[in-house]
Image (cartoon, rainbow, N blue to C red; front, side):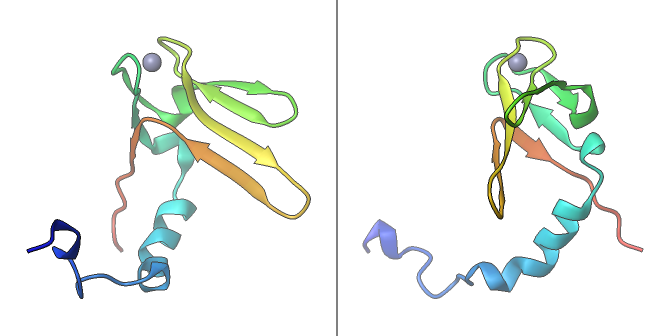
Length: 92
Ligand SMILES: [Zn+2]
């Protein structure tokens, strides 16, 4: 069996998971948990250090490595996230 065929037929496109991703991205960012890719520090989004310039850069409060870049452009906002992020969403 070709390893690239392992999940053939088991996938959706991005539209198929839009509902759950909408919940994730509507959640309160300050409650997101993040594990830093450089130092392993675990912290909440609200604890990151933020720097404002041409865009926004959030940095690990422990080592200063980049956790997120937010870059406003003409008609879009580009977001780059680093490290391992997680969010707990409770259903009502
Ligand atoms: Zn760090």
